[in-house]
Image 1 (cartoon, rainbow, N blue to C red):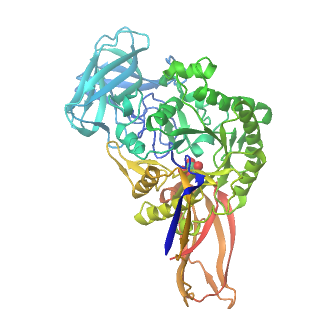
Image 2: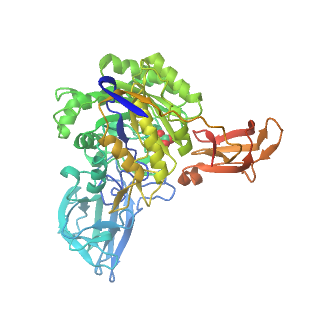
Image 3: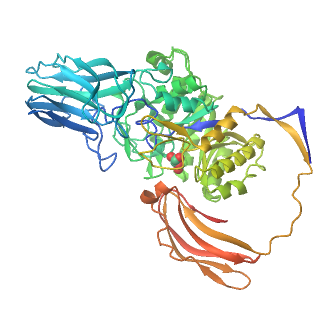
Length: 619
Ligand code: AHR
């Protein structure tokens, strides 16, 4: 065959095509990218986050020698009204010291020989207490790797800090805080950071994970979610509030810890200011996603006449990113340490919403943003991929509103990706563009990665229609898995990229600026008679939802022969249990079949969850 490339004939620009998506699931932020080593640093863990949680999760009492103490959590005199809980250590008998310890994430607090760690806490004492507090990082065997002493000398909440250097490497240490004497010691916001964070940012990112992300060289970063964004109550002051960006900036003590819908607690230590900084540090354009005031999971809806503050959140965010320091929100950004605007080109409203309340509200956001900031590109949302249905509504809304992009998401089998290589061939250049905001084939194998690579060439060749694309999810802590597959896996001291990661990296490193015209001759597939028979497997699969199936039958249209799924449970997938498997599948072997036509018949009923199911045929 011959391949002719016309180097002078430019096609569509590839623009910002390949980027990344950060969502705090799988402990991607706390216990992940966010470098804080203490878990539950402000004693805010609560059963609302996770049924096993309580205010002392990850903490334990320390009583040495004949020491004895009461350890409680109180909230009557907090230093932060937004994070009210604090620990109280009442010394009953000092022994060899009493206090508290933190277990960190994964196997413990990781320290490396010769490296420095920044300790801080807020503390106060009652008047009878006058002995220094000893801070140590200790191995499980009690060996002290690093230590410092702090004199807590006030009965007012005061911030104390100490730098400690580790004498040994130990990835399973504990942070231990002990004291002697008598009376009560009050502690809050107990924090330990590696002194070295990515680009040396205070309150910064874990270096190895951040570097791995930076090495992708993504054109953009979508954040902070996902379902994380819109799952929650409508009251920004409530513990299970939807993700509200204004709650995530400023002093970390004043950021209200929240229930993360992935069933854990989110400190918000990694907040919007840090996201913007990180984007700047890695050269990625920020793409924040905001809720439209509609929680599709629990059907909470902001009434239209109360929508303005939610729209203001979007406008203020744009000002926060783009306004100079004379503007209200540009001034706040400058006060946080970044006088120059971060810049913002894209904003997303909504994530996978289905249903009219979202689309009704989207129109208000769209109008207000375009009126004030006509150059900002707005991303409309569409539901998760479910054979046409809800996607269509997203596209129609985007056409009606003239959205710049539509956010499509799909997690599918490798076969689906191969079959959909041409998905965007017929999308038109004058329509809203595709933002493929989440996609992955189900697995981290070489085959998955290869298939994704093939699919990405299909995205590239359709750059006239596909504006942005990012694999999802990106990060996963091996001990806190909500969802898999994921692109990058880590524990408390190691990180590795999957083969899917290296495919993403390849495409990001070698993304061209624009398409060239290509003529290919002689590559047509030779004509072949279809094989006389096929062997295959019919699979019903679903994810993140429970679906009841009854009477599933495959009927041969010619012979009327009926094949039935055997042992198909009535509830195909359960959201809580099958989530870890990525997808719940039930298959039926077809055996040798002729080239006949079949009809699949079943009765189905959705029990819960936002998603649909797929019917796949393959080996
Ligand atoms: O990427 C994981 C989840 O998948 C996202 O939170 C959501 O948007 C999608 O359903």
